[in-house]
Amino acid sequence: MAATADDTDIGHLTLFKKKTGASTYVVLAEVVEFNPPEMTRDSVEFTHFSSPDRWREYKPGLRDGGEVSLTYNLIPGEADDDQVADSFAGDVVEEWQVEYPNGAKLDIKGFFTAHSAATPINDRMTGGATFKISGKPTITAAA
Image (tube, rainbow, N blue to C red; front, side, top):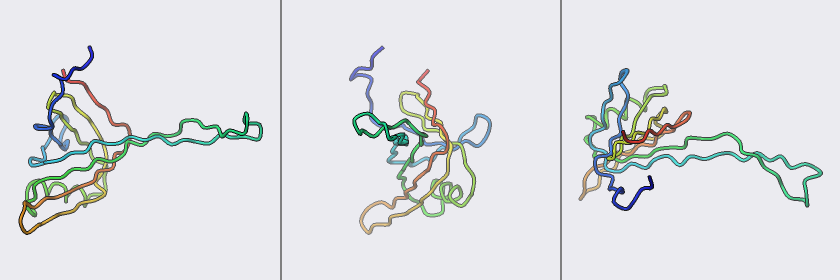
């Protein structure tokens, strides 16, 4: 069935979660912006001396899951900031899940490559993080 305008939604209630057990997750509680991965694929050149009409020839190469970025309300050294800092400090690939408002889930594995903080004088403090995906992201439709 094709999606309609009635099926679209705002991002409110999207969750970014770290897998901590077989089926348990810890939610980063105050995420305010999430940018899903932009997946890419390499192109591998296969041009040869006899390529027709002097046109380059290519074949699809390896895929890359891309990166995820997120912004969250910052309370230095607490909750979300502590979770991101701990994951950034670790040298392991971890499992994470994004749960969308309609119940669809994006399962990803990866690690944080950047962690930042902003403390403006007249606005909320925010933390930022970039997450590199390792392997194939898997999306599961809402049940």
